[in-house]
Length: 297
Image 1 (cartoon, rainbow, N blue to C red):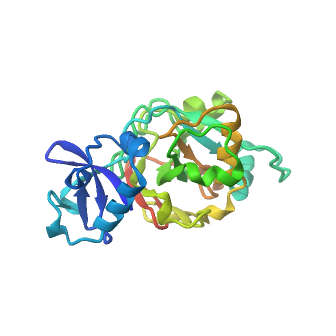
Image 2: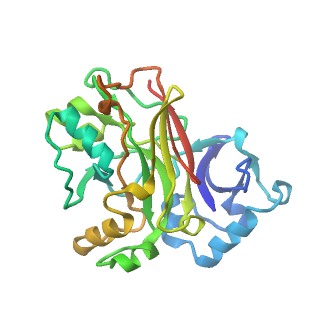
């Protein structure tokens, strides 16, 4: 199922999309009293998931409170992450090569260990919300389409073989980056964490909806021009590896968001670089999940 956070008449609700994504059905119509996505992630039962999957196929006129998608404001599915987002750096080989070119570094083609960093996200921005340019401090604003993995239950010392059992679902994110800030400070935290730098959505697709491991087309567009075009099976370090490795030393709590890295085609990868400017429209899309469109403001 595709579960989402939306706003109608000033009230924020949780809902599911019908199969055509033309209507939203509020989960409260099915006797579920969840108010935030984190509550769903931590508390939803298998039987409730089955019920919601069943109800998604129903006619909208059978569902109390159903609303046409066009009449709702779609928000980020997780509005305020409980902890910093965990990100994978340079986790596609072609992106590793373009990153090395931008930094004027030699690239030997070997990646023995994953690169992890965290991203402060005070609030995820929704699928149509503006990305702040922060023009007073950023001269090289960049986009990064990524697959987000959402952990469904507390994970500690998980084996690779069991990693998939801890996944609640998947979403689309844009790991917006200020390259000049990122480069100046050597570590990436500040340049990745400015307000509005984490568009997410349009929904979370629950894990049972997508074959594992996910082999999905991932793309980004700027003003309609295709920039990134890859597939999620080209990850250097896959989901099993990441969940298992991280959980050996720290508990991944339910609701943890892991951004799995971006493929080649980001702005810094062009010669000369093609960074974002105010007025640009950025679209990040992943097959079977959806797309997020965000203007730079």
